[in-house]
Image (cartoon, rainbow, N blue to C red):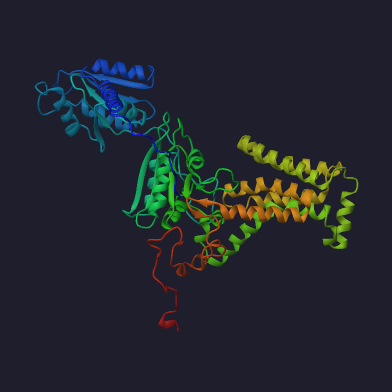
Length: 532
């Protein structure tokens, strides 16, 4: 987890003096002027005279001879806050005393302390914070004769409400999902974890977009070294835009060239809360409902939030079913190709005769059949996703039925191959994480090529190479195959199987080393004395 940087030679005294002089000149140039018209001109120039920049000037307000300016961006602010908490407060007639005897700085202080009924108010004296404030949806108040201003919180505008997640649905469990507003998302998590130890570290990433990024973790439970490593990697990001959490994922992940995700994403607040309680760290990005979780292991990708809301035996069965479905979606076409091409002796005679009869007259080898059908299905799936929602599902179903039936009748593919590809496609939808399902989609083609060239030996060689690759992966220093490699007996309670809640006494060992115990021991329910 150590990262090394090339050390730089310290600058000379002359260079330091020159740099300090430039910094001082830049700071002086960015300061606000005490003339309101100059400040408003600079704001219009820097924003390109955009029409959504609203500048409302108020003359002789509150008995003062000075002119005020209220500046905000239409569409980014809460209109009710602007009208009732700012404009109405500045235009009241029942003020206690004439303010014309006060200087502009004192008037601005009186406005801030007595007239603005807004929770968050701060001062400013430079142009850059002013521009950033209005771009975030705040309102800025300036007064003629003062080189200072006031920032009033008025963030609002149209946004999507809390709805049921679309990508990770559950039968039993919360139906709320993240939105594109980062503060709404952090509030959803705080509603579930009402602890002062739930800490949030904010960052702004992207020179142009200035995207808000929040790192959430439980102080005293999360590994401090992993938290610091995540913050260091975020601080090293130097780009002009961050539009989605996928940008962050690619910038900070340990290994780039791997089909397996080393950081998972979710749009479920309960999944984030559960991960944080285990000692993991959540990364939320403004503008997207998908939050990141790190560090993770490959077994986390087969776990669903619903596993913890129903009985442990059903949860274990479904978890094993997902793992088997992942293996099937990755290997079933390649196994069919290998057996039908090289290892026919492994099939029962009756089945072998049936497959041979189906393949009679098929002009292509099995690998060409499989590749053609798999690519056709991928095209249909992508078309179903990109087409309008009202037509997508109909096009996918009709296209698959028509093309499959027509291909069999035309003698281009065998019926068995259609069954293999169809069951593979269904198995690929079982995984609760889209990331691991995409990994199986990508690896499937590689195993098909290996099966067509070396048969089962090629498949075994591919599996061995994949296992070696998985053993070498890390997620922020955490081995990807934990707790099997390294093997940790204490952490086997929530991997392939899920034991009852009363038996899950400790948190994952390698993720959390400070506060591993989550509950009291020996809490197994027992009959009351009256029922004995």
